[in-house]
Image (tube, rainbow over all chains, first blue to last red; front, side):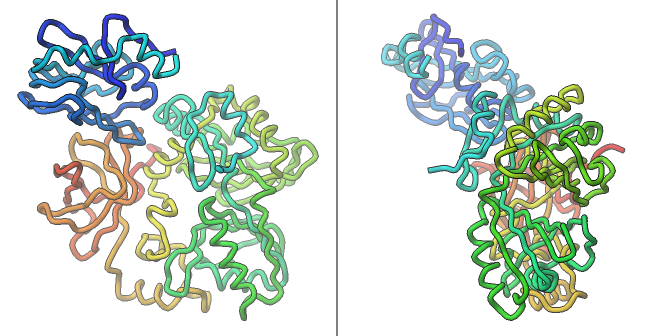
Amino acid sequence: MSKIPNELRYAKSHEWVRVEGDHATVGITDHAQHELTDIVFVELPQLQRIVKAGEACAVVESVKTASDIYSPVSGQIVEINSALSNDPALVNTSPFGDGWFYKIKLSDVSETEALLAPDDYLKQVGG
Amino acid sequence: MLKRTPLFEVHQKLGARLVEFGGWEMPVFYSSIIEEHRAVRNAAGIFDICHMGEVRVIGPGAVSFLNHVLTNDITKLGVGDGQYSLMCNPAGGVIDDLYVYKLGVDEFLLIINASRIAEDFAWLTQEVLGEFGSGTTLTNQSDVFGAIAIQGPTVGRFIDRCVDSFDRAPSSLIKNQITRGMFSGEMVHLARTGYTGEDGFELVGSSSIISGLWQRALEVGHTHGLKPAGLGARDTLRTEVCYPLYGHELDETKTPIEAGLGFFVSLTKGAFNGREVLANQKNVGVTQMCVAFKMVEKSPPPRPHYKVCIGGKPIGEVVSGTLSPSLNVGIGMAYVPPTVVQLGSRVEIEIRGQYFAAEIVKKPIYRKAS
């Protein structure tokens, strides 16, 4: 059974968002890391990059496949998790903690209201 | 509708992730590709290979027929021996790569790729009706036979207990030899072969006993570290040791010489399908060659169809690529022109518009520390 922390918001494409004021942290869910298994490479967006909600901005690679990660929210990338470059498996072991992907300055805070609540995401993944 | 092997329910119970492969619904992994890969390199893994095809070739004409349709020299085999071989069209293109075992003086068993069963059997049937086919009978047994592979350095310690009885102890076979055993009153072929670069065996028997054999192997093998392993690990294991996979390194537009498999092409045995082209390529060289490469620095894993470049200019294409779980670096195989690339050459692999340095290395990419 995959974990779905209550304090986060979710995208249908299996990213999570932790909103703090006009900033947010983004990663992929426990369900997503479990589906991918054995994450061996994470390509993160450039710092300062402006991304739109729904835009592919990172790539996560397992042994078998490369998968695009879509930004659940719009804004500017202000920090990336450089620890993932040496230890991409952090996404497997700690998807909601040390395995975070990037921090973004939100251009439209109201966008986060359109994201899935934990219960709705749970329904989506068939919990 | 995807075909299911006799082990389908076993895979479901083990919580395997199932994928389509060659028209079959097969386990790609049970827990993790990397864990299963390491189990095979360090101890033992058991694979469902029931999707693979079996063709029986029998009769006084079988030897000359097989020497006509295959590239390797079948007369080198004694009863109980096997060899890797290729089946080519007259242009030298590879119809399939396969294992052929000599079960009796006039009796052979071919183990062929799942994705090529229909093509192979159609080709063999056409050829057996031709001038080299007299005295040869073909039987496609792919639907009645299943197979499992048990691979890894500890397998020799428990393989003899995987069956009820045997002609020769499987553990006494040398590489590529085959023997017969009995399990639940049915005959099982046990061959000391595999697709992982480790010691190991492939067991072929009636579909009805496959799940029993699987269960028995796990019972006698678990104290030797035997674990179920999926097609994901099978692919990373074979890529590390540069074994070709049909549809990647091999297809009907590529020859065994281009694939680097000239060792399995006998030019001294007389005429056979593709001989002229292959002899010419052996003498004057080829325009494309399958080489192995290793990423020089940290990079995303290389994957099939990525471009191989020099100075940003494409010169070839990756046919297999993965992160090597043993070496923890990106590895793969690619077709490139031998005129511009030699052992030790630096090339780049283009990955999502970026160029990552790779070095052309000797096959196999991974070699066991001895």
